[in-house]
Length: 218
Image 1 (cartoon, rainbow, N blue to C red):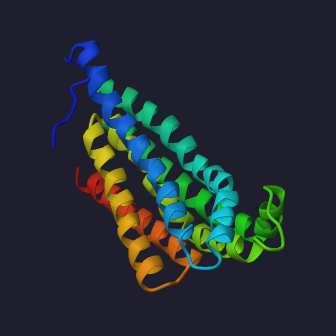
Image 2 (image 1 turned 180 degrees about the vertical axis):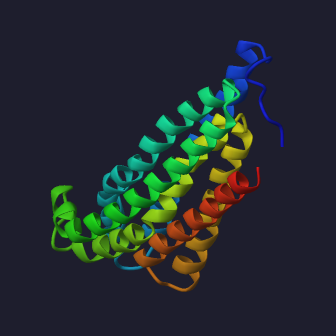
């Protein structure tokens, strides 16, 4: 576990040591949707409908997750500035406030998306044939909003302290977990599109716990 020294490391080396793990994390993060579609597309008889339904939910899920990015990027930059000023008390306060904001946002977004999910599905191109599968996927995913926002938002605070590799590792853990659970729930237990959503939520839960434990003990 190596921390990047923002104060003494040459600029080019510092940028590369932060950028490369962040790029890998972004690529791995895409695996969530790709793996879900790979498995649901192979569901017998209704695979094409499930694949289209997950595709419709894609931009809705991205919209939901973007609130975690909103808090994460803004808060982590401010935290890094405070650490550079040796003001650890202020940095801790920023982390705490960002955590509270993510909690409040996750509650509001969960309630809001649950109430609006019917309209959202049709606004993003859903049909009567796709609605049952899209509704199942979106409902389960929305119920796991807390873990999604926490894992996404707080991960930026790990990078902001110089631990870009650890931040990348948390994303990789979630992606691998998602693949394993998709295989078990969809291919083995035949749960269908619900299995894809459950696998994603479980993966985000594990990634969230990893991030929270690292921030808590470091």
